[in-house]
Amino acid sequence: MGNYETPDYEVLEKEDSFELRKYGQFYIVEYDNRADPDVDRGFRTLFKYISSENKDNEKISMTIPVIQEETNENRKMAFVVPEKYWGQVPEPTDPNLSIKKFNEGVFAVIQFSGKRSSTKETSMKEKLDKWIADKGLDKQSAFMVASYSGPFTLPPFKKNEIWVRVKNV
View 1 (cartoon, rainbow, N blue to C red):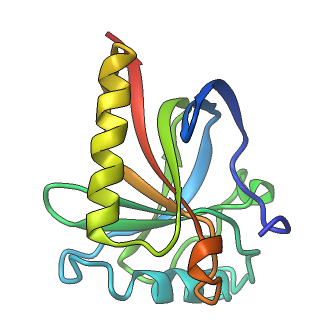
View 2 (cartoon, rainbow, N blue to C red):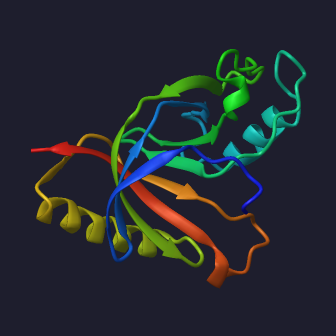
View 3 (cartoon, rainbow, N blue to C red):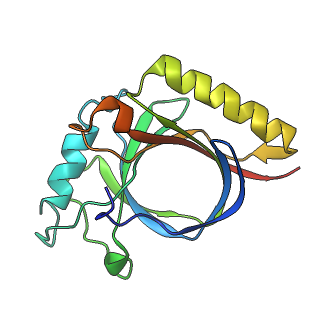
């Protein structure tokens, strides 16, 4: 996956599979559809957007990771916009897509490999919660699942992360 653009960050601390990272601001195109709470159509809709289904009819390079956030209402899925478009992000034509600024900040991260599952994600969130508490940090966002690998990557080689925005207590 080394040929894909990814948001820049600085590692502030690393401990086993945990990292404290500082991300700069970047832009995302977010799929948010209350009629599709499990984002079953999210990736396909985002893929169509980058394949030129946008107001500029512009083909946009794939980036990583694909980010999913689970809120109280539903799940959202987002595509990271390549840096060359940050001055003018092509407008989506799909009403379930919107352009958002992903504000800079510090994030606690846990990395894991393999196929994603709710059981594995819950376990990783619990481990990350404990690490955050042990560090005296306070969560400032919902958990986000960042997926770096394509659908045809063999499970042992899949790279995933859980992110959460944090600040010192």
